[in-house]
Structure formats: C-alpha cells, structure tokens
Picture: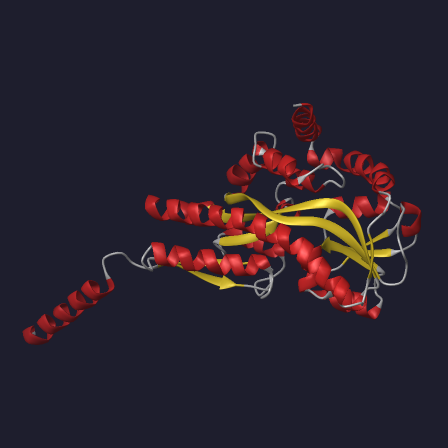
Length: 334
C-alpha cells in the first residue's frame, strides 16, 4: 500500500512539473461577426498573440457569428459573468447604460478623429464609469472603428428625406435608430441582424443601413438595387470584459491583454477605412447596384439630428448630451 501511495505522489508531482505551476486560465469571448470580416480576423489575431505572449497561460475560446446570442444578449451575459469578453456596438452597450448611445446620433460627427477624441475622452467617461460601477463591465478598448453607415434600398432611388416616406427600413433594436428613421419619415422595422439578408430578399423591408464593409461581407448588395452614401452615422464598437474576470488575472496578463487589444484597435481603424473604399469598388464592379453618391445630407441632418436629441433627451440625460455637444464644439473651434 505504501509503495502504491508513493507511486501516486510521484505521478502527481510529474504532472505538476510537466504542466507548470501556473494553471491555464480559459476566457470565453463571444462576438457577432463572421469569417471574412476584418474584425473577425483581428479578434483571432489578438487571441493568438495573447496565448503566445502568456506562454499559453491565458487561453481565449472564441464563439463567433452570434453563436451565444445577439449583441445585446452577450452584453447581458458579460454583466452576469456567464461570458468574459465580448465585442459590441455602443448601441448594444446602451441597453445597460443609455448614454452609451449618444455617439450614434445621426450626423453628429464631422470626421473620425473628432469622434475618436470625444469617445475616448472625458465627455464619455461618466458613461464608462456607470458601466463599470453598476454593471461590472470594463472596456479593453473604447475604440474599434466600424465605419460610416449608409442606406441600401431595394427598388427606389433616394436622395432626400421625402424619397424615404413610407419605406420600411430595417434598424437594430435601438432607440436612436428608430427615432432617426421616424425623423426622416420612413418606418423603422427592427429585425435581428442575422435575419437581415432574408428580410431584404423576401421584401419584408425596403432597405437597411450599415457600413460598406458590412454590406459587402453580408452580401446585402445581392438583394438591393441602390446604395445611398448618406454617411448618416459613424459607428464605433467596443471590446468589453467582465470586471471580475479581468481582476482575477495576474497584472502581467492584464497588461498583455490591454496591449494586444489596443494594437488590434489601431490596426482595425486602418484596415476598415481601407476596406470601406476597396469593398465599395468591388460592389460597384459586380454591376448589381447603383451607387447614389450625392444625397442631400444637410436635409437628412435637419430632419433627424435634433429629432433624435429631443426624443431621447430623457433617456440619455441632458447633462450627458450637453457635455458631448460642448466638447465637439470646442474641438471644432480649435
């Protein structure tokens, strides 16, 4: 019996020596993107880099393509500790902190640098504080450039808000989109992202809106006749992590994760902006769609921007709105 016990102890010691004293930590990362999208490639890259730099001590399991649910579902899972990391739009984060939706206001931004400065600066910090303090979620990066959103339509050319009257436009399940489409006189129709292609194909809706790389990757141009370069919203996404999951990591592992996600964020901006141009050219080359590059953006802005602020002032908080708008004004006056 003593010999058997000695043998067991030796085997256990050998296992500990072979695997190392540091136990492997497995984190679950759910996101809505599919293979072929720039974001999906960069997620896989930073997951691999984190594994390499931690010598396999941090392993991140990736669940792409809404395997774990819609964006909003995964944000809830993150809060509840069921999920460790997720990639989400600011609109999805607004289901927990409504002010997160402010940067999605139509025609709010003059350019990306302006948006990046405001989102990552003091004007939006109270919203990120609330996300952490109330919902136990922290940003690994506040910046994940997604691009300018544009309309696509199935049958009708659109150049002014009047051209949109009566059209059913698919929108995410988010108040800012609903109020924007109402403001320009169309009918907002919330449909889950995974069902958009079928809804366009079957004529359930007359159109939708998304950045060019999304229109390209999801092949919406196959079932639409027009792309309207309205550039009505500038979408920024976030990489979020459960605060407890992050706190449980060693400081050196925390640093590596922040560094690699930050590097991927910078790369995302460059690649996605290039993709906006290149993918539009590829879409045009198919001959399947007509691109309308001269919509009356000023008319669309007049119908939608203030309408959205008015409708959602109570939801977002007047103080939050004023702080963001004042910061934008200050940047433009410099």
